[in-house]
Image 1 (cartoon, rainbow, N blue to C red):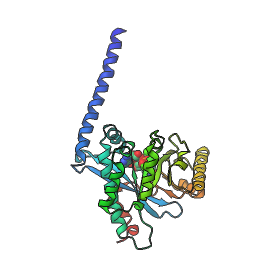
Image 2 (cartoon, rainbow, N blue to C red):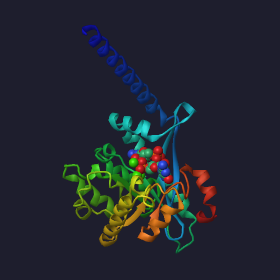
Image 3 (cartoon, rainbow, N blue to C red):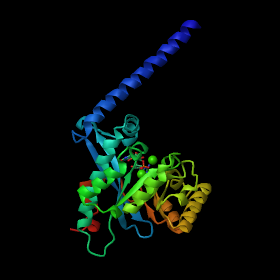
Image 4 (cartoon, protein in one colour):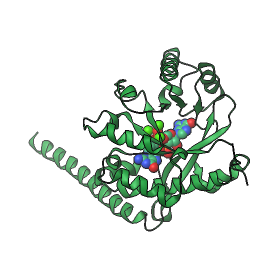
Length: 282
Ligand code: C2E
Ligand code: CA
Ligand code: CA
Ligand code: CA
């Protein structure tokens, strides 16, 4: 029993250290990713549920590790969040999204609604010492108007006990950004923050949208969230819309905007521009 216990312990240890070594490698490679131009921003269309018209895109980060295969964000963002690398990476994301927004909106005919790009913020980035100053600098350097950018954050960031969360959100909102709660419904949903903070948008999590046409209980939750959003004057975005039945259910409920494979997958900027040439103008 004793030796089994020991080998069990050693096995556990070996597995742990293999995982730790992999993280160190990942971290080292990621550190060089920015300078080596291995990061890419892909864009997924956001559409009006009523008529499918494209109103903008969500920017989603990809890493072409060593110039080879694309690493999905779920694989490296948690590591970057732990090590703090998410701070320079997040700045690169915002800068790149702002430059894209400038290019897309340069050609919009006067009077046409601006195309808006949604950018994901991570908590570590939000709490970095010069976050708002960095944001202002990126706006200034790129010539991007804050109305062209929506900042997405998860509920966990908002229920942070640090008092400054309200002050930082107020500053971002005053600059002119819209502020979205990502994955709405999957966090603690302490609804008080919806009135305490200047939130403009709720993104209903894919796990609810998935079954909005097939699961009455899920549909009930989505209907309730949409109703609450309407009465609070919030914009509602459904994530992960994959089929026409889901779109029809969301339309009937009065959800404003949607994203998902039904309308388009995340693609590199050049491909997005090719696919949306009619929307993006000359
Ligand atoms: P998210 O912000 O909730 O992004 C939505 C995810 O759903 C994306 O995964 C997108 O590709 C995927 N998706 C979109 N439509 C559909 C659909 O119809 N069906 C299904 N099954 N999936 C769909 P992705 O690109 O792998 O991103 C995963 C997460 O990584 C994001 O979740 C976000 O939390 C994080 N992330 C991505 N880019 C960034 C970034 O620039 N900064 C930060 N901090 N996080 C990012
Ligand atoms: Ca998001
Ligand atoms: Ca989401
Ligand atoms: Ca997510």
